[in-house]
Length: 187
Image (cartoon, rainbow, N blue to C red; front, side):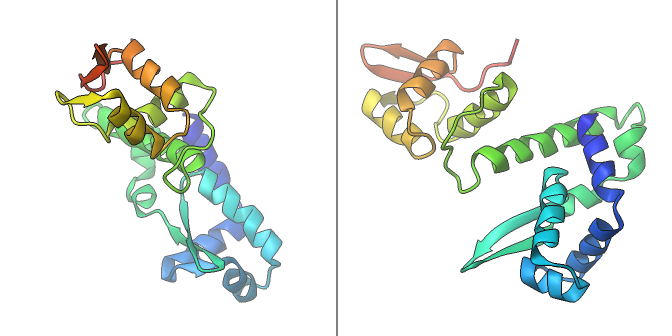
């Protein structure tokens, strides 16, 4: 529910609403938004961080600029789905909230597809581990060298990640060969 509160707090500011309306017309970079809205670039950046944290806006680098765009899936939900999910839609609303949280974690810890620092919080770390596990094919066997190379494309400490995968039952190791079992349900 904290994601919903964060969303409503972000929408509770007139300047942020004006920024969202402007981004609804087209993607823009900070300086263009600042000029168009008669604000300083620092003010726009401050508000963009709040909007990104709420999952309303995405950012991408284009040359020297950060270009912002609306996160369309965030605007596809109705207030009813966010606050008062119907019995039949409760699972869908919860799944959407979980997906928004997942994307927020991935964006924070893997902004360019590489995880510099593994999250300390277990729930967030599991999300990063799941992203890394997507690089492996369930049922396939890999040498230790192959496992290390694949993991290192996302996180430098491949030893810790590899041990975590074995510890969680996502992989097993026998005589230096790793068998991928896939993501096991969390307990």
